[in-house]
Image (cartoon, rainbow, N blue to C red; front, top):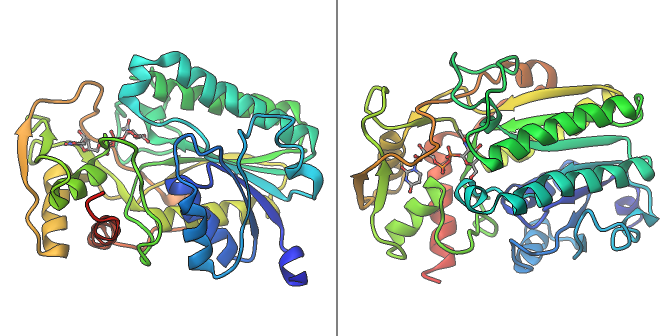
Length: 343
Ligand code: UD1
């Protein structure tokens, strides 16, 4: 127990969410003490006990909005060595229908949380950004120095705005708050134990959870959104990476901040490999032996034709690289779907 108390305490906002839960597990395995902050508006309490089951040890968690100053005071009553900020809304379509929600929760929530970090002298922040900040990138693979093009959705704009907010806060904090801004490409898969994974509330809008639900019979066939794009097979290209690889990148980013305490830098997190929607379907069929019921459909508004990462900066500076294959991602996503059953 004493050993546990000596571990650096790291706040993980959105720690019951998809990427947050996998990251909390990776942090604990790397010798940190994750402190889960989640008000469960978009996640389930059962995720906490599933994480504890994987780790075989209890986790500190607080059911609170990370921007709630009074509610967060208990979290800061013990020293905090760093924070990873995931808590945000991420449905592109919903952000178009309800932009105010996205501005308030994603931008306002980040501003409120960061001011708490400054007030309590927390030295390190890792931020959850997205490749969406690049829009329709002109050059592939995309590097961190690519221009940020006008956002295609309010969601995308909130990620750009948060990056700008953090750059400004970093300058204002005069070296007291180091930051790593991580631009994720497409996180997929699930923990190999199948105890945690993606838990979309309602019909999923992302490809892999829709696909696994279609295979399990929970949904009708998967619609491939467009096969007339200027790509080799006509379907959109993305860079899919395993959520456990992504989780490990957050540990690497914290270690980078420990060595570069007053820095701020931005890192692409992807595999470097572009995969089309049709290739995802083929990979799923190959790795599970199951057919994916699917049909071709119209393009989805707001989709870019192709984007994939140049992750070499993360490799060089963070010492991180993605290790798991797409077949592994999809086999793990399927194992997770199966254990959830038809509910
Ligand atoms: C987008 C954002 C990403 C963000 C994520 C949050 C971009 C480039 N990416 O991911 O930054 O974090 O939303 O939700 O803006 N597809 C189908 N049928 C489906 C669902 C998806 O064909 O039923 C296709 C899409 O057209 C796309 C690919 O699958 O080509 C991946 O889609 P999705 O999983 O929704 O992720 P992005 O839109 O790439």
